[in-house]
Length: 465
Image 1 (cartoon, rainbow, N blue to C red):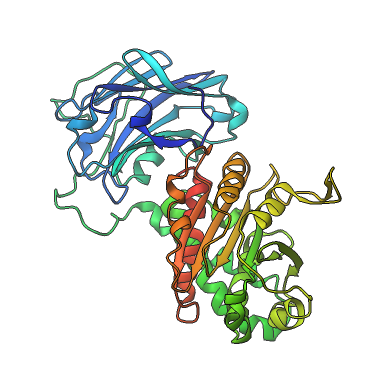
Image 2: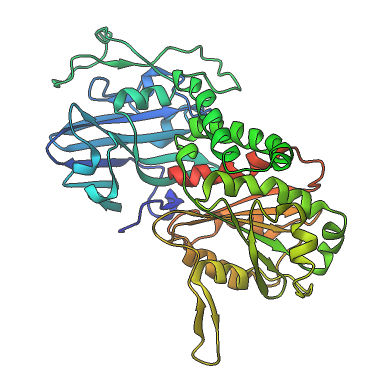
């Protein structure tokens, strides 16, 4: 089956996970291409160096993972049933030994195979990458059942950087005598730090974790530089600092530079009748004050596109530094838009596909906000379940092939049964939605809000969803 990058699915939908299977990575070009499989724990760390499988360590302790490579082909034979419980994810990578970048490869292929047949296959070329020295190809991970996530995204730095990313250390010593050897051009072997068998509930610190300090300052300076009036600086600085701290931490955790990210930020606000008290009491306005820094951080224009929705939708003037303080009273409440029911699909279609009007032919009124040049980040806030789950699922599926991520935020005491099931929504090119529940927006701290808002988005950017 031919797939697209970002594909996710349950492995047992395609093959028998109780029987041996293989992962094959192939790259052709002018460089020397290495491959590695990292067997990591629940903290995404290489807590047992014996589960780093590559050309200089070709077998895991009980043969659950075996490497065999020849030329441009790198094959890992797997027995998932034999993996110890602490190994919850296998990450398969390609990296360049020496000069060259992944943007210069002629072609690459990622395959999951069983009984000699390719079951899942992704073809890539140099145009899919830029100056990266490595590719995180795919993950096979255990989340109730065995699943796969075909990331196929570039990673700055080569094998050494990948090793540090997963919590290992570099050493120049020769490998232990019981490790099988194969000829290779690389003289020094990366060796993972041996960590006690008792896994700490906190992630193991890595050298990369010193980075957030400079990135946090970079983001703070970037946002505060867009604020001219002193009163706005006083009002927004605490939100800006909290957002910078959160973004810096997620950048290191998920391997994506949120400090350099350019993205279109869109907020869709529930305008159903049950939301009336949240608008009148100032809850929505206080939340808007916290969302403006997202526009300052990621949008080139320092603004946020705003849509209200009930049974249909209404596009509002953009939220920016000039109108944020009184946005609810002076923009929303004076718009003439009336409260109604709760449908998700119309507003999502307008954002993703463009607004349409007219009769029969339905001419385009405005182009889609979503484009191929920069990601679109939709924050979708609602206090109740939707009356159109079928139509909503259809637009979410079609949008999964586009450059857009939708973060749903459930407010209040609704069970949000539909939103909680989105992780298992089939028929998507990739998992393009997140969901978090915040019963009381007033009591939610800045740190909690930004962590909920950005956590799954940063995973999507890196291809981890």
